[in-house]
Image 1: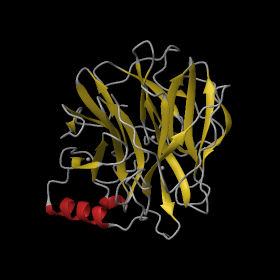
Image 2 (image 1 turned 180 degrees about the vertical axis):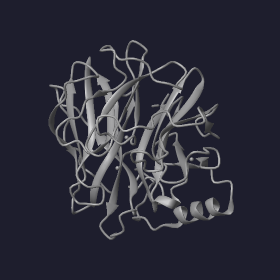
Image 3 (image 1 turned 60 degrees about the horizontal axis):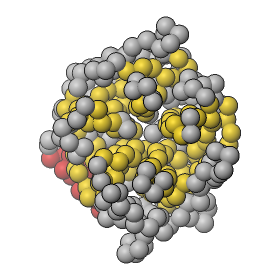
Length: 331
């Protein structure tokens, strides 16, 4: 298409059932998570840690008119995953009709905020990036604003694939973009509007070389790591690259790829997020990829593998696996 979805109707139930019964690669999960980590066609996963649980919020991967709800998944050990069906859908977001994409979750003030794109918005159309809120990470979520938070094309960036980043000063920023352009903006404390950036503007373009979509950011060792997907989302060139800067506003100079397909394992690996287990200082990359047996563009699965940093702060290219990762709890 990147911590800060309920059809309350028969259609949603049938869609959810279909998602549950899609074929997946068979692998024992007794010692490792296996990849995919849960059944069904899902993509664009945003991962988070809440309390002693890992959570993953993906796109339901189907035709745009069927992408009208979100499911979430939780685990205490990265191996056994529980499905939380229909945490938000278009019946609770009146302005959203289709193409609900790439949720991004963040916890703030004992509330959980789910940011999402809807309607595959183009200039002059209704849609864009919305916000939903809940008291629990598994929902149910309800529309927080009653309209999109971002519903205009700024700097050529389609308002999709958003990520919410909390900086060390406590300020929250929303990064987003499609069509090869990326923006950053500051969220006001109520998460209902945007504030001003240090330069006095509402939006700042931070597009790195090769950027397509799926933006993501972390701060590690006082450096800001910007990551994104490049290539075509249905093609073999779909992958993840990164850059490092001293500020969340860049400039971000592309360093190289950290995730891509392996034709011995799967195709089109991209649109990722990260999990950090602070107790063990372990890093995991959660992403989607397409099984070698599938040709349908929407047949994507959510997978997890380990991510490692070099001594100089650079990121080692990820080895995608069928085995996934060993169990690890959060205490």
